[in-house]
Image 1: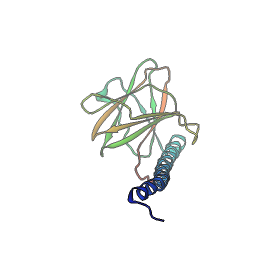
Image 2 (image 1 turned 180 degrees about the horizontal axis):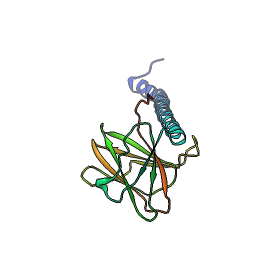
Image 3 (image 1 turned 120 degrees about the vertical axis):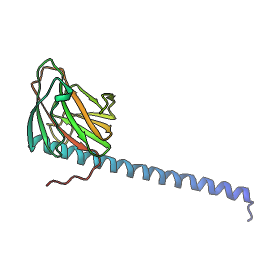
Image 4 (image 1 turned 135 degrees about the horizontal axis):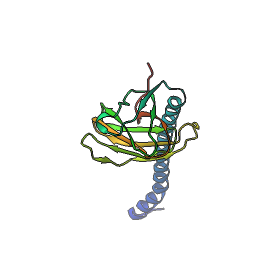
Length: 173
């Protein structure tokens, strides 16, 4: 039996489409699994520090220039707030990238860059299956420099915060 070139090409196309689709879906699922694993690992890291510290107590400021520094890695900051007033803390970024700010409760968060411009959140998550302590985590893409977070205003007198670089390898000293 003899087939012409056009028929052979059509048969190959019909056979290749399901194979290509299967490969593409498999690759997509593998990528999604990797992202989910990284998110789970990050949530576990944030939970560990929110629950167990180490911790440092700071008092937020009403003025950005005197906002306490919260840049120490792998540290929970227990931030004292004044009810009804937005409390400010600073975060010094040494390497540009995505950073996750995690909190033990819902709190209004506004972040400004070193020039004072407001920064939009890349992502916001609420609660986590990893632990009860992780109530709010917000990802920002940050440039090098000193950033200021305004927390509140609200009725809380304290909020606990942990900051981690997203996707970074975590080592504890």
